[in-house]
Image 1: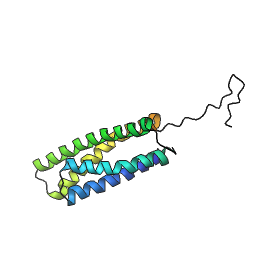
Image 2 (image 1 turned 135 degrees about the horizontal axis):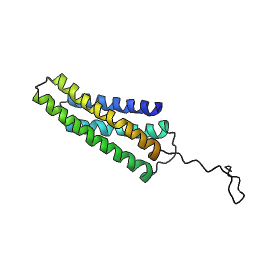
Image 3 (image 1 turned 30 degrees about the horizontal axis):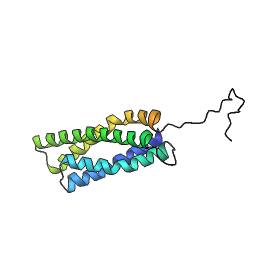
Image 4 (image 1 turned 90 degrees about the vertical axis):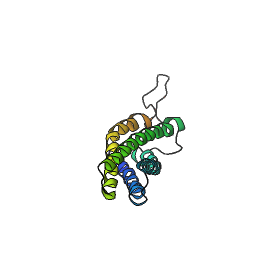
Amino acid sequence: MFRYTVVSLIAVGISFVVLGITVGLLKWPAFWANITATAIATVPSYELNRRWAWGKHGKSHLWKEVVPFWVLAFIGLAFSTWAAVLAESFSKHHQLGHFWHTVVIEGAVLGSYGILWVGKFIIFNKLLFVHHPQDLEPALDGRTGLPG
């Protein structure tokens, strides 16, 4: 749980910085800024979650790890982009200055990631990065069950 939290903080930090640059400095629309920020942050998130948080090594399994991870990332992208666009609309409707416009969008995206965080942990821990230890129980055919 600690390592997953640290990886999440790193990924959110990367996304937050990219979002701040694209919305705050480059004045991109929230839609494109959030897509860019999420795409950039998802790559280190996958690697850090897989290798450090769950201790998986070796080649990634395309259908058991990579595809489900990216499906979850795209669900998070859709949800956070929806939140960013709503926040942008709110900001424009209330005629907030550019600084507060950026803060509102970043807050909405951060909040959306917070909502998804617990669900993703359960999916990662129970389905995606599950360790499959060898059966160490004695077998009925006389094998000891101990690794050779």
